[in-house]
Length: 375
Image (cartoon, rainbow, N blue to C red; front, side):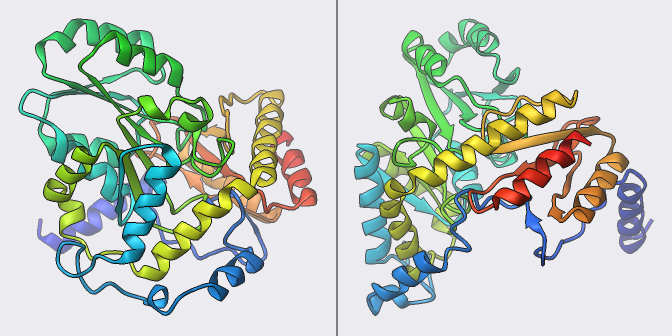
């Protein structure tokens, strides 16, 4: 079978399983439930204009034209990292081009010859890719089952120099949350444990000043590697790792997705920093989107469907791929852009609509959504 024939055959196999993906266009006239604009910043014209009004000429630059090690570094990047470190009370922070870059960089750059990796079964694909790229031994504990994680540590931690335990704070497909106090307890009971927490869906939404679930619980100081993604609640792009200064220095020297990537434009970095300083004033947006998440999850459970969401991400479980596509069409007819999530993004038999809420969703639209999930 030649190359072109094989490619067509693989596309046909995906089509037969109702798993063939295509790039959707941004919804026009529909309420978007598939994006991650949790605080509604993308549509906030006043906030954007306030940002433009205070830009300096240097911050207006639209490109970096090189990696940060080869001419692409900027005062804006350094100022943002300093402010992030100060906000978290940490020694340092390092900014990456995306959350995927950060998560695929950390373990390969930092793992030693005898490092063991322990990761939640439902960790994001970017974390799994980073683990695999490291070539280190790893185990995946059952989702949110920290008793299972403890047994694995009791069995294996003593034979390794360190164990990097990895999880998300808010899980991207189910909307449930990790038990951070229990994770910190594991760290205290096993001195060679290093905690790596992905706050991609926690920052902006949780915490008194929007710094995420660990900050909300007062446990951010116990997290060795805290990853925050700016392409979601921040209405920006890029990601950061909050860590010790020595860890930052080693990432600068060994993290290939950082070293071999063109730096982000100063204007983007300035916008991210602007949003960071605006987060403390967005408590009402956080309250609103979290309240909507609770009400929607309750409505879905009341309809007889399982729903373990504890956040602004609320799964509407369907089961089969074909049924998920049919439900997406039903939601679209009702005025909502809610795309089906199918394997391999989620396990076989758990296709769903991932209802991603935003503080900008109008009350009347949310009311219609509650009626729709009951139908």
